[in-house]
Figure 1 (spheres, rainbow over the protein chains, first blue to last red):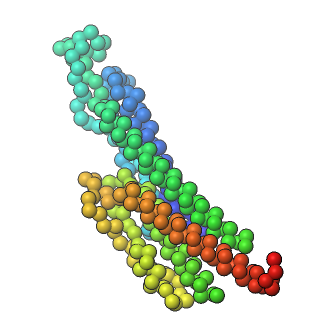
Figure 2: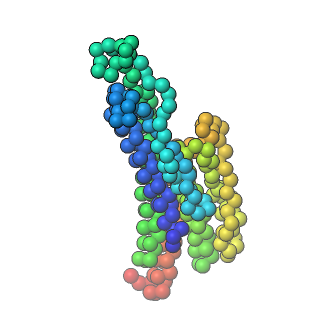
Figure 3: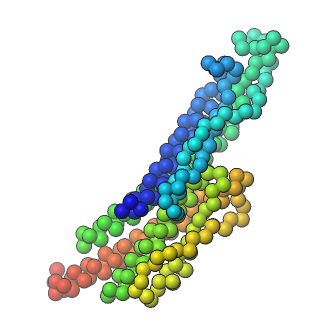
Length: 135
Length: 114
């Protein structure tokens, strides 16, 4: 019985993982111009790390194991009037590329939809199987 | 009569198992290093065709890909979705046929009347 519903569980872990990814992307987009953070320095782009999660042989879900910080250097913009400008007049802007984030967001949305389709179609299969009892 | 029900339930077994593999593949479409896996629907069916036995062990293989992505992932989401649709249809039609079979048996048991 447990293995009958396992594909639903597998797809649910993927929905969860893609949602975390979308949250992270939303934070990146929201902070694309945050030049200061409580930790000091500009906002650093974040990314999720996916890892497969073995439920049982042949049923492999996915987990977010870590939200990592992108270590690429910040973007320097010359703007001496800015409050966060250094002594040479340069402001450190976050290493967020809005285009990259939008592409990642689209990928995450598509992956989310694919797993949702899987859940619906598998649920339909189980329902039809139970309907055999109604003959 | 009983034979065709065994055959149909074998189709259900194989389709349900394949669906399990495909759900794992779709779930791991973005997991670095994950290898997509699959079974051959027709081969698994022909193994048990004609016999009254049920399929037990399936021959799972890594899905061949022409172009693995740079992180080593071999899942092609579009292919997997197409396979999933195919497997769902296969499963649903077997269920429909089993249902019809049972309905016929019921009608016969009732003496053909409604």
